[in-house]
Length: 437
Image 1 (cartoon, rainbow, N blue to C red):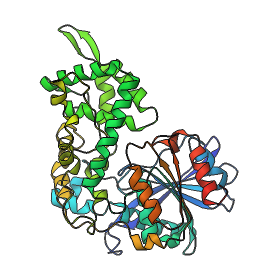
Image 2: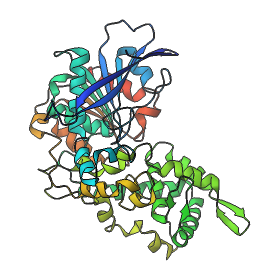
Image 3: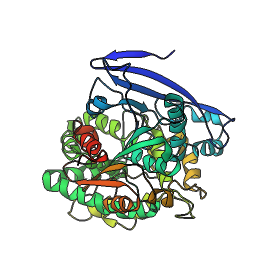
Image 4: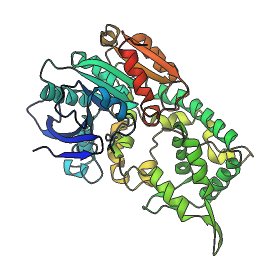
């Protein structure tokens, strides 16, 4: 029996679905996928169109609603919303350091995780659509960030299930290799660094002091992690959100405290850093991150820790080199590095599994350019001009390559515009896809 919960303004219903681990073997092993239905209070029995939400990531569960919060407030005016915990996340047969050993050793774990990319997520969604709406039913797909990548896979594999598609900050390069993704990402991150230090020039010295301290003495984090200088640099991930620069500044304000032996990194700072750097609540983000760019027809080689390899082409991100001069230490962005599987306790047991995935060379294609070129599903996409996470040029090239796709290019919002805009981003996309703009 489904669990039904009422919150102010909404009614929530739990759904659990059994789906094949491998959709090529539908009668084989099954896993569970969880989704939460959200409908406006008073509309529980109304004949509303469905909207399925595909979360960013990879490896991120759907948000947990608190009434009509964030973009849901706008969506619930028109839709019955399904918040999907993508396979391996949240309540959908979680894949973590605790559960993956049940599969066996690293080789078995890596093979299992090959079924957790966008193609499998889309096929899960299609099974769920047919069970909820019937064979002929169609729904609206809303994809944020990686969820937008999944939306393009959806339009490649099963456009017949989609009435309209809405994408926010998630138009991927259809033919972009992992190396290309990071080669164009580091300059974007450098620009975000420059903007942050221009806004908070006092942070230049603070970051240099912390980096210099960590070069000589890595710090122990409260959860058992190790804060090396490279791990500290990865806090630059924060710079891609609308309030990330300000939040980073406030975090740095609390870095030092005078202890019995002189200045030391404060527990307040280390606790906050632990919360930012740990992958305990989403290990698949790290384990599968570069695999989302793996496609046989794009690059026959492995992804092979592309972010780490390409970083060598950008010496400005070398902290020790920066400390030899007087300039700022650059922070990194949305990059996953092999050393993270040593410094983070949530990832350490998965190091060998991640290595095997990084060495894999036979990733199936995720996009069908010819199908997308002939696409007839109305698509509206928000492209954030200053997006640190997804390359604007790649997004616009993809927009030109997909039939029926309209873009709204804006610098009013950062990558998290859907979440923080109070429904304004979603409202505009809905009006675009309906031809009202």
